[in-house]
Length: 280
Length: 176
Image (cartoon, rainbow over all chains, first blue to last red; front, side, top):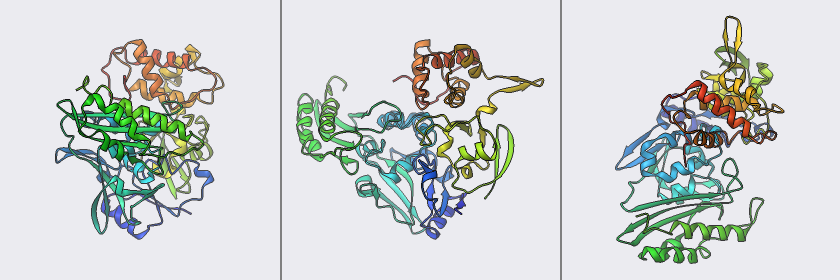
């Protein structure tokens, strides 16, 4: 029989996590419960849903700290997230549908770290850091150091994800997000991408561009970022498009094909960098 | 584990494995079979119930996680007055508009629509904008019979009935 524990405090949760590293931490459960009847029952459930310390969105050092237990519906409702990280709201609205958004959490998307996790390119583009806690202490990792391979993370067996921290948004930021799938709701993405483009005086000073479903994990497109840095806005779109092919090597699978994914990624990147002057 | 579940304002007792889905406990242990299983993967919304007031797929929640929380299923939508069952506006309008055919998706749609309507999410917006919002908010409820048109009409009509001009509460979604 599966054990069950609903800790009342983070300290209690971390102690339980250390004592039972083989138990399944569960918050909304929207991922781990898919096909539950056909999966072996876990040894225990560590129920983190509505654990107070994992909730809430707070201001921190000019940026935002979003608790790992915050749901995608709560992300959509938060005016500060809308103002400073609009693409996180855009992504939240396309994660599953209302029922999934009411239950799925920020921390859950990170813990699974599927290459098609909808929030992950956004967190990469916004250069978010993860806060991880254990009875040994707290550490912070940028996402590229957290996700180390296909659904592989650097989360230690005694650790829990407690929050993401979004740094302050630099001036002149243009935020972009687009998901491509068979329909807007529910369907798993074929390709999705996000970008934060920092423009000053008609020049792209710097950009972060990240895509999902084009590699074994969500990735930054370093060649695209390098290609556009310092370019006049008018030249950025073509240069960005030209650098996509050397940045990613998507695969063919049940949801899409390599060539299609590459073309869509090129089109999205070109669109992200188009019209930067006009919308400045 | 021993479980105390509050469903539709009534406390139920059950002895369940902590890994069991809420959907199964509702249907098999509590005999509340109004909630339907469609896909079992959180794709179709047929099993939608309200958990602490928010719509969730009961196939993706363990019953153990619902201890001490408030559940509302389709059986709890109607009110009772003077021994008479009084249907919720969304139920009445689904009937009046013909927003149902085979009925498997209907309980989930009624529950999700109740959430949308009772929050006043469609108040103060034009009918066209309301229809677009309903389509986004109910995108997780799949119907393979109706083509959705009459369901959308029913939800908008119910919203007009419940909150003709109440202020708009944030529901998520909204105009794109």
